[in-house]
Length: 322
Image 1 (cartoon, rainbow, N blue to C red):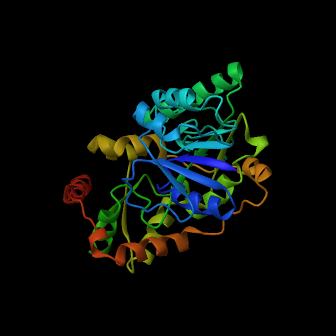
Image 2 (cartoon, rainbow, N blue to C red; image 1 turned 45 degrees about the vertical axis):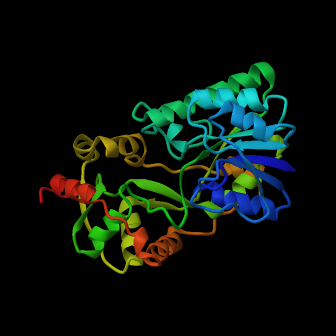
């Protein structure tokens, strides 16, 4: 297969690109060459900017594709550009949506692909829903061959699972209290990007995936108390967790608000039956206990990665009344 990734060096896609190459896929990346991650061995890089129509057209000239994946489409305008560039030039177009597009808070668990899309709290999610609706319409009226993939919280070794990242670990290591939203017992799903990649690459060129949507997540469900404790253990300390109502956090910090009320404050677990039917070899083998150790090893390998946001730490102290 000849496949194009628009992007391809991000947190999720950086695991999908090398796996696709290892499966014999003739993989091209369209990017501006500004990623902190190097392109994997075996890919062909097309230098172009998907946000600059002339630049993208010049880079893509003369190519047709078995599949195109847009990793960096976030708004309907981005999808409109994709439709104009790739209609009639690809056998499959894969849009990376988000599991945060599902009903928030969910009325029924586990979430399936038929769960209604509705997130009144987060504009990011509503934009993803609007993108999906454009693709469904293009398929319905013009048979544009979309596949929608909805990742949930997918991480690699560079990404801590909570807001403000290493600042929280720094507080843990200094013996300072850290904020856990709610009572810490809501359930959450964390998926290692290498596990995600196995399900994702299996959808490329898969005729059963045309006109369909899939989420791809781990089957491991953890409470936020467990997530904080696993990171603390990997950091060699014990977390002093303080539970604070999500509404209180949101009122104190608008930057924390959207992703919290629109996603992380709710129990979110998934039924992965559909992706397992489409890609029978898909399994998740990396529990977060291993992922947390991998994350902390990466941060501890280079002190320059241990960035502490003093304003965020002061905000946490204010919320905690310290």
